[in-house]
Structures are given as structure tokens and as C-alpha cells.
Length: 325
Image 1 (cartoon, helix red, strand yellow):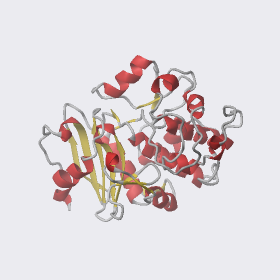
Image 2: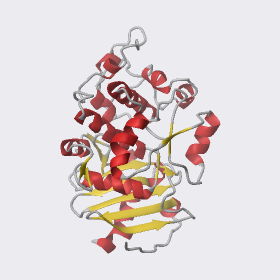
Image 3: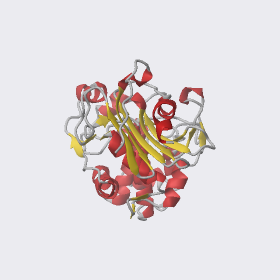
């Protein structure tokens, strides 16, 4: 295994904890900073969303979900939308995956949802609105809780258990355990604390994994996920998810504006350059799963909390990857 030391730096990259790079399936770079060890995990923020997209593909492959065109509320037969709400009934799974679902909030209602006993049910109450299905990009972290509920009700399995069995185990990733506390104080501490996390995934009081955030992974584990994506759903000869889903997931579907670095968006994965070979799952702090189908590179980068870091791919391609190309 090749190793190369780089200076931690004082810019946006100064919060990086780990970097792991695979080239053509072999680990060629594995570095830790700020006292982190290779097996330590970091809260990878919205990279969690990219993992959820993979779980949706696995559920589709298994036939638990027929298509991304299925209506979201069809998976919640016991839930009745607020009186007069019609738009919510028209929302499809594809709208959750592309962040084009309509919501009756301007920004994520953290306090109202995350102090409730069931975060999925609390989120559903915000789905819809008078404007209908406009196709507008509405980035939300809490809204992804609805996707988690769809997967749980479709598969009859807790999302965390489904991930452990169908995604993490085939990649050699140790099973995640529920994070035990869900108080407001603990939510803030979990997001902001710079200490390594355990092998865990944040869960609500009802035991549902947080679908838009809350997953703890190491850079090595993220690089393994990226390698599986680079190989179109296979890892070390094992089929994890269909090649068709990886293609659909990574395809650019929504053009993002300046606030998101003018990237394109697929199914919860970004396309930094619309027609380029790179696609990525990204989260605050510059947490990153990077896949380049052209160069054979898959990489994982972890970092402690720092909002809206959109230059991590540029840093990786400028400072780390040239040595292996």
C-alpha cells in the first residue's frame, strides 16, 4: 500500500481527518490527520443521502419497490395528509431522490421534527403545498426521512438493518449500531463534536435511522462504497446493486445554481461537471465519496463540521490524485 504525506494546510482543507484512495481496486493512498486513525469514523453529514440512494436501488432490484414513479404516500397507508392537501398525494419517490419534492417550509424545521417521537411522521406533515409539483430543486435534509420510511415499509426491515445486511456486509464494512440518544443537546453534540464517532448511525426515538444525515463512516469505508460504484455495482466479484441503478443514480437530472457550485444532481449524488466522468456523494465538512470512471479512481474523504465546503473535489484532484495518474 503506497502512502504519501501531505501538509494539512490552513485553508478549507484544514478540517480533513482521513483520505483514502483506490486506484483500479487497490488502495494506493491512506492518510490520517489530527490524531485520527484509519478505522475511526466521522459523522459524514449528507454523504448519508448518497448511501440512501444506494439502498433505494437495492430495494428496487429486490422488487420491494416497483419503480421510482411510485407514490410516496402509498407506502404509508395509515397516514392521512392534512385536510385539503392534494399535492402530497402526487409526490413520487423520484421527487425525493432528485430533491424536487414540494415542502411546506422554507428551511428544515429541525426543532419541530427532531423533538417529536416519530421524525418520519412529523416530516410527512410538511410534504406538499399549494404550488403543486413545480420540479424546482428544494434541498432538504429532514425531508429524506420520508425516503427512509418508504424503504422501511417497502422492505419490512429497519433501514439500518437493511443497510447492514445488503450494503455494508458485502463491502466488508462493520455493521452500524443505533446511536443511543436523540435529545436536542445530543443532536448538536453529534454534529459538531470533532472527536471520532463509533460504528453508528443516528436514529430517532422510534428507532428509524436518520436518512439525510447521521451516518458515521471512515474514509476507507467510503472509498469501498465508491469502488463498488465505480465497478457499476460490483465489489470484489460480488453484485451489490445493479449496474442499471448506478447508471440511473449518477445521471445528471437537475441543474444546480451558484449556491451549489453550479453542479448537476442525480439521485442524491452530484455530478461536478455534467458531462465529465466524476460523480460524488457530498456532505458538509467536505465529506466525500469520489468516483472517477475514466481514471479508475475511487476515494473517501472525511472532515469535521464546516458548512458548505464545495472545493473538496478540486483539492483532491489538485493535491492528491496526480501522483496516481
